[in-house]
Length: 205
Picture 1 (cartoon, rainbow, N blue to C red):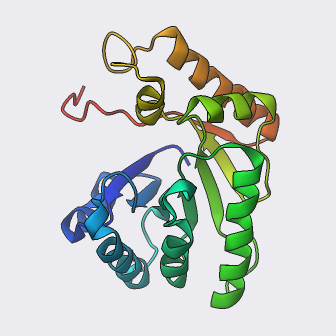
Picture 2 (tube, rainbow, N blue to C red; picture 1 turned 60 degrees about the horizontal axis):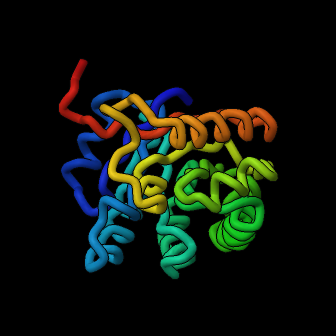
């Protein structure tokens, strides 16, 4: 898959509009684009979207909340009823996190009667200094993985940086390093390296 589009999981209008730009994958988001008091509503809306989709358009992935929020398992328990094509796993820190997510998916696929191992995983693998170092030291591998993606926004916050570079799409050395580590780790793990989101949404060109 070449392109993904993130859409907030608590916006019926945006989820309905998402396939119009013909991305290869639509990421129904339960994490950063959803306020804390709307997490449960988003779970229900994403499940309804998954259940109503004819699956004739882009593949449907769900970005769950990170493990340190305590919401990950609840997110999965809800959305796996809708049989998403995959899970986007934010703030992943190394092999142990990937293995834990895969363990959850094993159990939930069994609960839902989904063929074992068919729910794919895309990590966002560089959202903290610890994550970058873990990825460099031991690139996470798993049969469910389609790839690792690098994320600059949360890494910027973790580092206390004010910007990733002089302008959108241009990165300082620290963020170039994270991007390069993600590329090399993905190749070493035998999966696809996915670039980060492009946040300057008003720049159509």
